[in-house]
Length: 154
Image 1 (cartoon, rainbow, N blue to C red):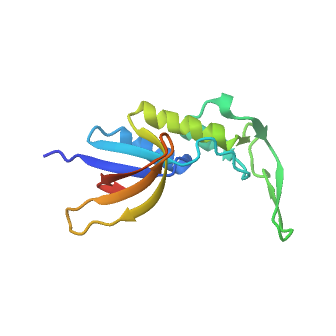
Image 2 (cartoon, one colour; image 1 turned 60 degrees about the vertical axis):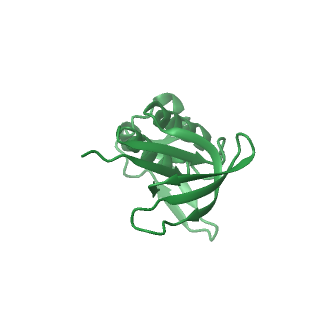
């Protein structure tokens, strides 16, 4: 007996986009990915070790810089030197988050995930064991408030 699931992934950053991609590879899962800000240029760094560039099959054209050394300084002036253990052919890839996130979301879509530009406003839990989650959200594509019933939420 085959089970079909409808799963929503809330958040289209690297973790959410990768989760949506893996779910969408399964033909028994219908996957929707919600992201509220499609051009999320975050101030946090986009540092990716070379092993992860390879593991996530990221194209080199989304890597802006190949860093060999860097110093991170916290708001309380604690310093950490990064890169001392890198092999001669290794680097830390720096990427802009809006480019990385978009690339990963597009890859999830290629496998069958559906992308909504939306913000979850409320989650209602099932009232019985076989019930569904009700997601209320603001759909930014047409500025409407909508609802959707799903089996699981990530």
